[in-house]
Image 1 (cartoon, rainbow, N blue to C red):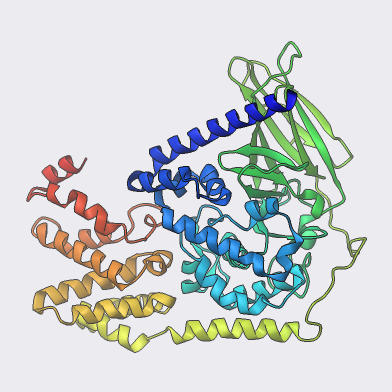
Image 2: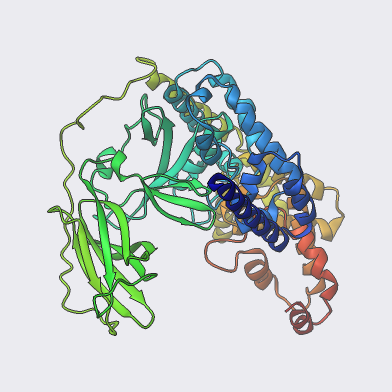
Length: 556
């Protein structure tokens, strides 16, 4: 009888969750809502597809189609053919192989291409660590580190550019590893508590537990930040969906945040932050913020909520952390939390004040040990050959990017666009333009295709479109230049801008048009260049009139 009730309760919970997923699909999926709903409710739909839809973010639901989900799931299931795939269970597969997006990067359909390229490299490999290292060498062929602005680029854009920041290195590696059935998760520290910077990297599932990697090396758990992580206060990792385990910090939105500190240092403790009101009663749902304190200042690292017992429980390394807590009506409280001497618990009392005073902000942190870590030494792979393999991968990347450079062709189009002027400014701008052309990477041919299509236009139209495309190259961030999908999408942008230029040519000077229409108009670059202009323009072009003021009013 008891089992019967349990089955009924589980069925009810399952039905409720399905209903919530259906509501979310209707709310966020727009024109794809009908096909996604049918897919989710179909009796033939696999649990993997339902799992993806249950935990897809609103951003994912807004762009993914039913065909794309089915294709991604089929390709993910196909990776079970690899020899090392039998080492892990279905729960690991669901959370760390199956997902099709890594973090906040735009959606790209990368899985089939990556599977086709990488599967020959690992098809005979039995050791999952060896496979992970081979994938890292493949990633080295695609990109190297270079700072970029804050908007994450997707894996295929990274290949076009040939470089990206640490989170973008993480994104392409995770996509590549998942494409061949290697379970991976994102990891990192929100801030090192001894300096004002952070870092993101990858953790790979192995039979011995999660291990990390960074730049290509002949073993896991060996990279430039190995010693640095010994000194971190907080290191976390993420799982797609709601994942259970001892290391879970919080389940929120469509993912689970976990602590990974135990994989990096033995000097950590499970710390308890207790939040009480002025009557010493536990405060449920208080907002608790942990800050790194360093020579650079005070920086927020993580925001959490206290549980029903008024506690936040989080594994932390040795160091000094500043903590604030707040809940409406209960008030505000704060304290320094120094775990260097083994302090594991701290109590913060909320009062009515929001003022911070009489606080000793001197901070302490660990000094990394000079000795090698105790315990097992990681196995090395490709003994005697790895450095050559790494150098070869880097050379292949450099050759590929150098072969994209078509300086003479772009120089001729600069002259066609701008005319010729024997002055210093002309040559200075030409150099800036050609420098941008050299970093178009995998989109080089796409830009030249559009220039060549413009060749067939007549007189003044040709001149105006040359200039518009040249100004796009000069003014757009290189991330946007490499992100635009192809020559068709690029030509659409040029044509739309040309039509707008013609409509308001008499009332808007060229300099204003190039600076405020073609160039990005806010910090951080433009929105994702995925070819959105065509559909967006079709929705608003009929609102345009001969009057700029009327047009602006109608668009608003």
